[in-house]
Length: 142
Image 1: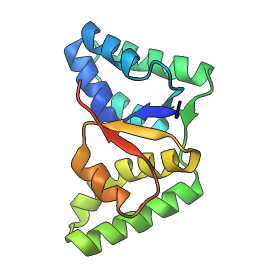
Image 2: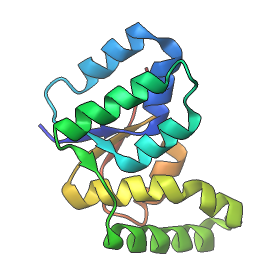
Image 3: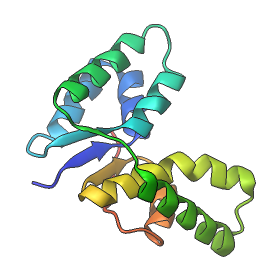
Image 4: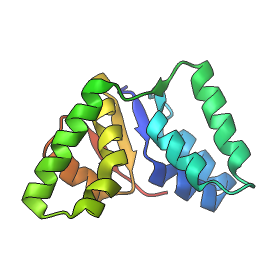
């Protein structure tokens, strides 16, 4: 089965919903190799409460041990910048809009490089990014 990673929106939803949502995440990726984006990890640390920080630390430790942390490289950064420029031209995004999408663009381009499917609850942004990038994504909600 195709390797998969969850966008921050999926992890955040799971953290808010507790144990049942964590089980749902496991079921969603039962047969697929699961990866963690370093960008997602950064977003999770930035938004984690003291109560949830240990969960994020465990995610980091487990994925690092499995050697399944996806880190954007130079080409990913470059491709993300180009995609953001195309989005700005097509949709008239202001600077803040492009800035908001930077992390999602990095997640998408690095996942696309390795053929990893992105699962997200953020359909609008990933659908637009897919217009200018080669990656697979899927909308889902917990």
